[in-house]
Length: 392
Ligand code: NAD
Image (cartoon, rainbow, N blue to C red; front, top):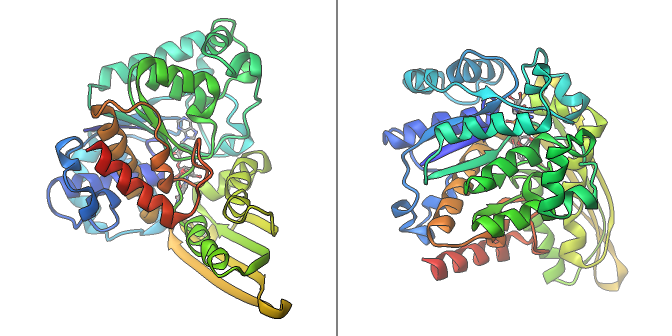
């Protein structure tokens, strides 16, 4: 299968490429890949573990090897000999220039960028270029995954985002203030019948116009924002308090991380999308909103080693108050990368089975699953298994 990463030189995408190549060669265990659990036996017939990678990017690098090496030097996030084993394959992967329209000051801070905007293109011309790049690469087995930096909240407009006609009018009339990179990439994917998975909190395919397009073109899509760390633990643990009828009074989540993702999120407009995405889950689990603090802070020396401190204050029998604490300390790209492959595989499976529109059963993979309020990891997993069995 072919995976087109938006943000192809980022640490999540490049880590997935390293793992993908090694798995294809049978030189790596499948640990971390949900789609390789026995529950999903048979998925390989529709989405085999054979990969070709491509993508869009706005940061300069020679090729995917060069980009991966830069991440590896900063992070040492896996054993170095693994990278050398895949050097030849990664050197052949060269990302195409993408758009960074309305991606905020966080993305501008990434350094010297090469974007389609620097060529003074109109929205129609930008879309045309993205479209050409994707068409050159894609076939019937291609999926687009958005793993680019988090954008600021979309400047939502019912006129331009509420319907497909409006969206296309926005492009035609070059209404730039309502455009954003993630919605343009998603548009191009869906228009070409390519399933789209949004691993970021950016708007992507979640606006009504693009949901309409997905239905019209009969393409599956899913998002938003990969559930990989602190929110994964939170939505696995939070139901426990509900099952025992304990009242959660307050939940504090304090996240520190470095690396490029942390740098981008240190800019408040880019961080806003992420905080909202992380923050909404408690209300959905409990049906009430406990007092909640969600903070994300940039901590450069940690690089990709994200640490989250959570403190939960809850009330039990006789009104007695008690406390629970946990610390999550993980390498972000290592927990995230295999999920991008899983999402791509399930979306391709869905497409081949004729499923289209939002595949809400893939909510298991996301912090802000589209079109469902189910954020409970346990029932999300059961839902995924049931959907897979029924669709198979
Ligand atoms: P990263 O900064 O290493 O990679 C992002 C890449 O996207 C960079 O190479 C950047 O240059 C590129 N990019 C930025 N804007 C772009 C655009 N408009 N078009 C094309 N490329 C663009 O970050 P990462 O750690 O790989 O995370 C990627 C995304 O996944 C982030 O949005 C992050 O919030 C999200 N995410 C990550 C995790 C996790 O790592 N555990 C979990 C959930 C979501």
